[in-house]
Image (cartoon, rainbow, N blue to C red; front, side, top):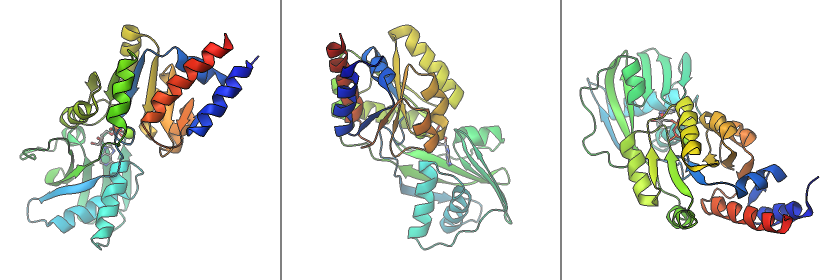
Amino acid sequence: SVPLAYFAGIGAASKRGILFKGGAAIEGLEKIKAVTMDKTGTLTKGTFTIKEIKAFSGLTNKQILTMAAGAESASTHPIANSIVRAARAEGYETVTPSQVQEIRGKGIKALFSEGELLCGNRKLMEDAGVELEETPQNPGGATIVYVALDHRLAGWILIDDTIKEDAKKSIQKMNQLKLHTSILTGDEKTSALAVGEQVGVQDVYGKLLPDEKLERLRGLRKEYGPVLFVGDGINDAPVLAGADVGAAMGSGADAAIEAADVVFMNNQVGAILNSIKISKSTGKIAI
Ligand code: ADP
Ligand code: MG
């Protein structure tokens, strides 16, 4: 049977933009000892702006952005959306590739008349044997999107994301509640650490493939106890299912929202904190 208190909890939560998919989600949240979060779209807004474009071997910045946008229009990843938007803002006309394949946690591969284009992170380049003769000098917290044409580095796009306004304050309060806080991300360590430092999480795990995120989550559970994972991407679906409680941002991919036990409709980091607080007060009434 579902105690009446859970209905009260569900009601209080919905007023704060929190959607519990059932009483079990509230019960699970009450026992959480660690909160681990995806970076892009969860702690950050997921709307990237372009900081720098670099083009090699006779190519222009326009060609790099146009080809990248053409390839990325096949993806729903926040990075992809931002690159497509940037090309459109410049008024560049993109060409649809004859073939395109998204490589989870790495980037995208597309076939153009110019050749085979790879657009993504260092791992994608390494897998394809693309030599990174040159890399950005001070990327800081920015994400590097490498672009290769026929297995040769053609350029890169340096993009920057913004941290959500309430991230730091919310993480601080979670730390005060003695919850272990961490980031699980597929992004490079430099960018992951920069965000981690700004929001004040206790640990940062970067460069993780979707399967590795799940493995890391199991490690956290062993060390701290029941884990809440908050994510937003298609890639996050396995981790959401594997966590003690899985939560998705409402702005996230359909697959993430489907796999989650809790959805934060207002996309705020503060909602994570509020959901835990509501679960604790609901639990008290239920006893
Ligand atoms: P996160 O854990 O930050 O949400 P993902 O697992 O979605 O990251 O992706 C990990 C990394 O793979 C990204 O930081 C990016 O470097 C690269 N990547 C993934 N998809 C794309 C894409 N469509 N275009 C370019 N890069 C991508
Ligand atoms: Mg993500």
